[in-house]
Amino acid sequence: MKITTSALAAALALSSASAFVVPRAQHVAVVGSGDSFIDEQQRRSVATVAVQSTLRPSSSSASSSSAAAENNDSSNSHGHSRMKDIHVEIASGKVLEGGAVIDFESVKASSRAEDALLAAKNAILATVKDGTDLATLLTSKATSTSTDILGINDEVIAEVGHKLATFATPEQIQNCASYIRSKAPAGLFQTRDAASAAATTTTTYSSSDVEQLNGIIRKAYEESGEVTSAFAKTFYLGTQVLPEAPREAIWAIYVWCRRTDEIVDAPREDDDEMLSDLAQWEMRLENLWKYGDVVDVYDLCMLDVLVNYPTLPITPFMDMIRGMLMDVPDLGQNRYDTFDELHLYCYRVAGTVGLMSLPVFGCAKGYNEDIAREPALSLGVAFQLTNILRDVGEDAVQRGRIYLPYDDMAKFGVTEEQIFAQRMDQNYANMMKYQIDRARMYYQRARRGVFMLAPESRLPVQLSLDAYGSILNKIENNGYDSLTTRAYVGKWEKLSKIPFSWYRTLDISKTLLPLPGDDPVIDEE
Image 1: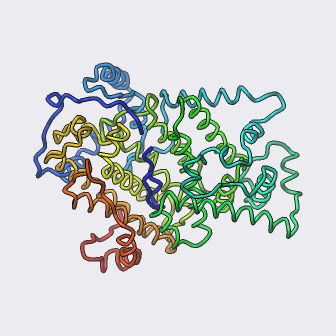
Image 2: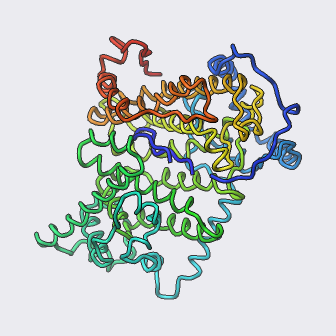
Image 3: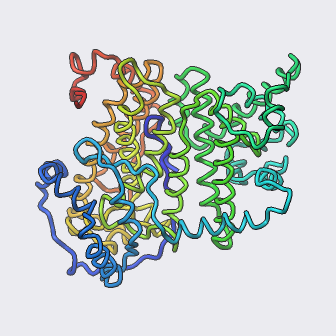
């Protein structure tokens, strides 16, 4: 799975499909080496209205558009799995600030993946017996042993170096959840019945109870930090400059994303078990937001985050699950024909994390989460594109997966056969220049968002932006060869950027005295 836990948080790099050869003569429209993404972007800006009308056909043309799409699906000469549902989803996105960024929040269409997930949910609901509620059913699936914790598998335990989640019994977990809910703002959670409501308001906790319960919460956060450090070292480094509360909240969000990735990506006999686990995971998420329900110790962290940051929305978490499904063979998106299709994927697996992080980071005076939304989504796209450009060869050879938009490949005369054969040439180099220009445009748009954050939250975001943006420089230094060479930024190089990243968080760096080579940061009206 290729997921970026990023946007206004930080960066991490975390897919199988059958390979096939694209007939070059049918699709090649070679672009000269002088053409660039910036040239294309200028042309796109001129045609913004036309682009939006294309993405959102009028009701009078809907039937003909649907018919054309269906015909295109059935006669696709290069064998791509072009599903009508992704075109519906793209058409439902909201174009932000001139068309560079599309907000795909809550966008869903009937699809094989969505239908399969719904069927798995219904199968779970069918096992609920009379007199047993869903929360009891979901909790009964968990035990106190780490190997049975959903999304915490042997790989995670091995990477961390010791067993996880063995410090609290199921009863202690539920007592701890009750304690956290007792501190929630009024109306944050629904109650299932009058008895539950009365228990929440009348339960008292002694000082020894509070000490024990807070100890469990602290341990859960501590292990969340260990998981974060094991799998996302750059990301973890960025969190170290945050105050304690937001630092731990970001760890909790990361672990939720990591577990979601593990559920979808873990080796299995078939997809049925994965879908059942993912359906259970989504139902747990819904119950957490609705009732404050938890199942295991790491859910306690997310419950605590929700109580401390009550504006945290559930939507980006739900959208990320759909992004994971886009990588599942036979259920998701086999190839990406256009950048708009890839943009949807980038939103779901990366832009969503920026939206998860915004309430935790907080906004500077004069800004709010609505204003900061576009830069957050831009950084998610930038990070995910960087992952994709860095890992072209690795994704093709190890996973049988190509994320590069087919239209872009055809424009520069690059074929799937060439990528799977890891054959570097000038056409590929020209295409990579174009893709890097595009990624840098999104980094530049994201840079505006740093100044929209609370001052104490700016440095980890800027550190991640600078560290991940450096990968693009490494690709250039490697002669644009990401087929046989993996761009890598070393630890000491990342650390050497800290003083420059710090300066870039200061208002003086915005327009008055930017660093040499930096463009001024201009807020858009």
